[in-house]
Image 1: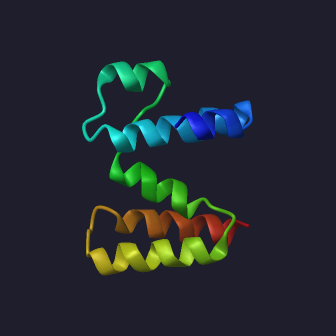
Image 2: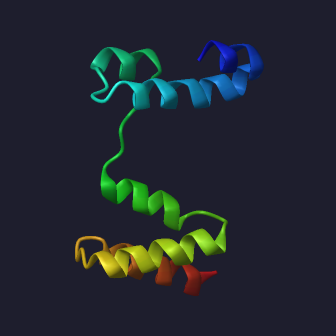
Length: 88
């Protein structure tokens, strides 16, 4: 951590160090989450963010993952994406 703290610029520190601390701490405390102003997103929010990526390969991989997961609660995200693509 100290090595990265000295190596990274301030913007990268704000992004990377909280992730490392969360990984080190198996159960992130409210204190850590509050300190770094972090919110742990729900699964559906994560998939929504991935589908909004400008990286087409990532979007395709996310769609495949949703289909393979057979989680019917995530299928509307694909439908929403289809509508968005048609409107473009």
